[in-house]
Image (cartoon, rainbow, N blue to C red; front, side, top):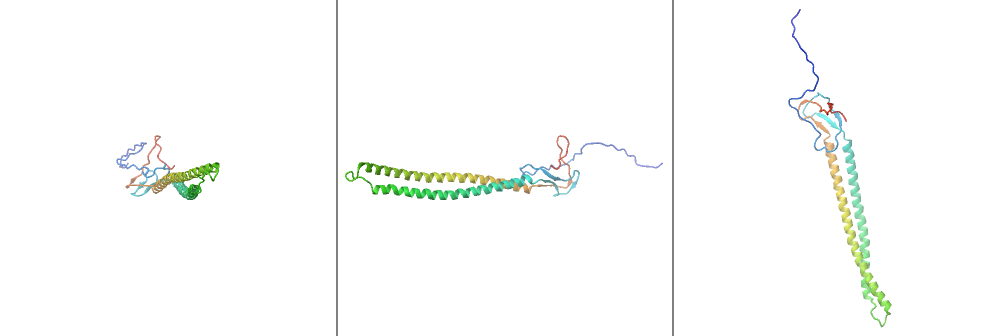
Length: 202
């Protein structure tokens, strides 16, 4: 017979709750769906600044690529619109100058003397002058209309460009926040869902 300590063991199942805990969540600058790619084991002792969760970069990388593609499309569209606008305005300006010369030419060589020219020729000359003035007014209106339309197209493309830039910035910010680090030393305990299952990869 020997003297020993008396030990009574009681086993219990459940989850320990910390007296003081710090909740770790997806960083606020990550606005996309954050899928866990790696997580430290439950119960692991961690030091301040140690990585405890890494998120999958696939969604954010895809968003960055989509933003880059949209930005290039907007830039190319704006460049094409400017080139087409320059060419069209040059053609319209040439048509306007021609239309401006026609009324001047018609007035200079106006058939007004009824004793020299037949009446049908005089009437035809007057109609030609009115038609030339209408052409000039139409050409002038076409230039203004083309400029307004091109400015509206460029404004829409600039909106697309700003949206693409915002998408790129958001994706880059998300990619920079893919690691969740421990704010202080402690023991890692994973959150649970409504079935009591801990957070895991995926």
